Length: 222
Image 1 (tube, rainbow, N blue to C red):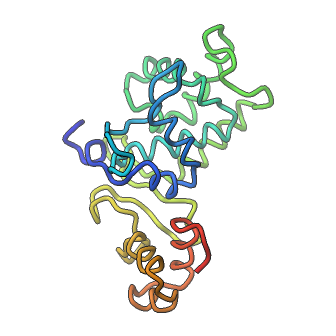
Image 2 (image 1 turned 90 degrees about the vertical axis):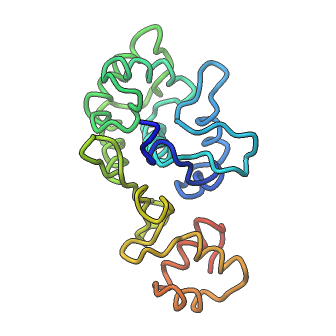
Image 3 (image 1 turned 180 degrees about the vertical axis):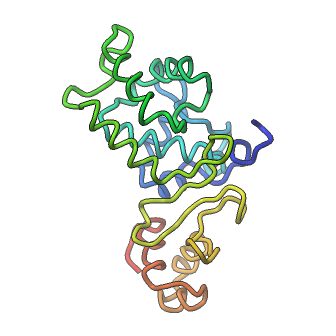
């Protein structure tokens, strides 16, 4: 698995990954580095610097689905033993990005939460059907290859503009769908003080796409 760029090639820092996914940076960092009672929940590379790219494509997909589970009422601080259980059930390490997670996986999590080991995993008001629906919605943004592992990730925070990551194209950097224009290049021009209309013309994209890059990556309007 280590020779596959989806798993082995870091694409961005944890801060940048969090911005692209619309996840609080502190939350993403906890998922990547682990909690006091458990290890990391997503697969990132080790680094001595927070400015170094450590997040491969597979970790982006994992974090996106983990965010779906969090929205559905699963407590990430309690999920490590549950992931171990899912790994045993599915027989694979990267269980967060299994296509079966929204069906069989939710049932496993639900049953595990009713055991002593899984106490506190799921918030009291959550229901199994609603959890499944939320996770299925998040998985709609993930494309899967013939090996059943993700090979495409659409980035919801940029909507209605369409931005996606294909680990085999543009060195795995997020691009505007159908153009190949890197979102980071658009944001860089804006950050340098260029007018939005000029940036749009330079890259051959719509003004709404430019505004999406500013909103998500720069945290401001363009």
